[in-house]
Length: 112
Length: 116
Picture 1: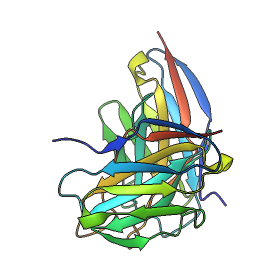
Picture 2: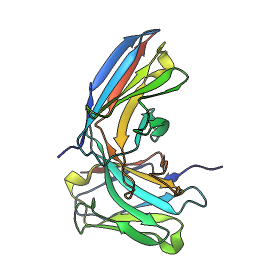
Picture 3: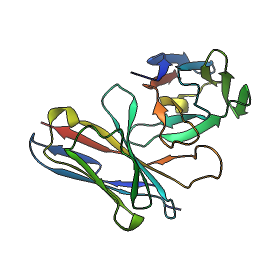
Picture 4: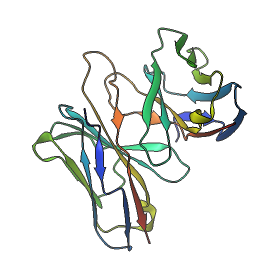
């Protein structure tokens, strides 16, 4: 049973466009939601993370929007660049446990 | 500061053979995790060490998998005997515990295991 559902599976965006990746979770105990970025041949690297006490967090061109009542969160990449082409994973964690539950990943391609 | 390192980067073995994967966490990180990603699916938790103690091994698929962390430093994950369904990318991650809430996990580059 997958506890974090991620969509879309793949995404193609023109340079300068907005990339949007969505995740939904079921377990209301989750209280930490990181996004990881993975380039080919590399491990996932933390991109940005949010806790449910805020509805939005922005770091540069990357923004997480969080909707606690809907149990959904999303990653927005503004002004997408070819260098953003990577696989993005959403994840969820809960205080008192240490493991992350990951989504299935979104392969983003930004066209030059 | 060196990141999480994993060895080997790739391993191709025959069904029934044994393979041992190694992970060196970031120096000083007490928490060490193993995850696995089967092609196209989610990154799935396998187990969690705090120093040399296993805290949670609820994700280990079966008793063909054995993880150790001697002296609380590096960790090994042994698969014996390997089966076709064990193929995937095995990630190791480490973290330094925060006082409150889940801590940030830093991932290694992974070991791609192919069982033929």
